[in-house]
Length: 521
Image (cartoon, rainbow, N blue to C red):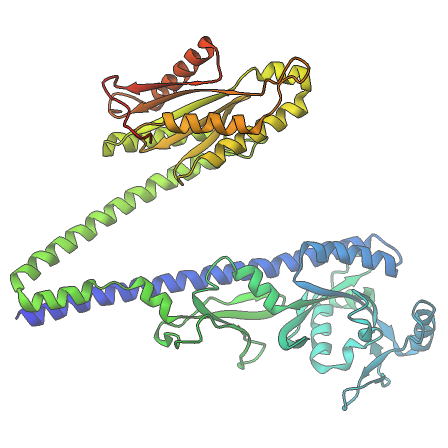
């Protein structure tokens, strides 16, 4: 009986962990797909912006196209080339080639032969030759190339033309030094005026904007900050038929095979007439890092002592429910806090450190934590001495520079991740030191750090340098205090230092019976 129930409990926990991992994989892959779709839509919006700029020009020339294309490529580095292809009827071909040859010598409408060579395009009712391309150095071989000479490209041109919307071509191979990459072309029609019907669009077509995208660059930019290092990803182009093809894959671990049983496919990514989806297969390390040894421990302990197993199962279930309640409570608190923080600007514009409003919120949170867990909390109010006189003497620009340097020196002195520095007012900083029994040594270190800057206060009157005054407080029994009182203690301590001559610090301990520990904080 002990073995049987131990096995059931272990398997139950194991399956629960498996389901949790499966849900996490689904969430990660869906987030990656959303990020990828967002990058693709940004590229489409930039092409629309370029089209609007071109519509403002009666004549599209090389310089205007290059300048506008470069602006788009600067904002979206995934675009490797921009092309302008015009529509040319068979009767106008000779005249068009002659006019284009005035800009580009030996210009001719060409296509690829069966052997893969560029030859003069065969006669057809309508051509779509590339007139301009940017950058020209790496793409000059496409000048004059008839986009309609390829069946797939012709279909995409016609679909984009008659619908009046951007269309993406199927994936093509892009050669890069020692490896091949997948890419695709985005086609956007440009019309004279604003045609509404198919017939109007056929008559009003001016040409096509063509953008060359590298799939790997889009993939890396969109996925880099999500799951790129832990899940094997495959980007699949569903195409217009039932056939699907993998156009990019990212393998994170070659040493161990991926966990195929947990493979997940995202919701389709629809853009510009294409349907992509992201297929994610977690690596072994991804799964192992999220698995615990609790099921194995429960099984072996249950074999030895069934009664102990029953107790452990009860405690584990109770603990899981308690943790879940705490997680739910923390989640609600964090959600409320995030909504509040979104309404506030966290950073100070001059120094880049946290501002006063955000600092007060953090102090309130730390005071509550100190009350709950009976922890020490320390706080410093730091004032730059005679800052107004310094600004009068040297100017506001020099004063702002001095404030930034002093802030950086104080920040470098703080060693713990939980310590928080904020600009409290014009010439005042504030530092929160959570779980710190005595902040006086830290105050001494900050004063020394500012002294090492040796910022001259007035070179004409003597060697005096800018100094700081610090008022600090350490609170152990915070049950009867709130954040405002803790800040008030720090400001009172600072006021004593200012009254006694500046350049040093004064530390207050609450309650007064607390003695500062030996050796600092």
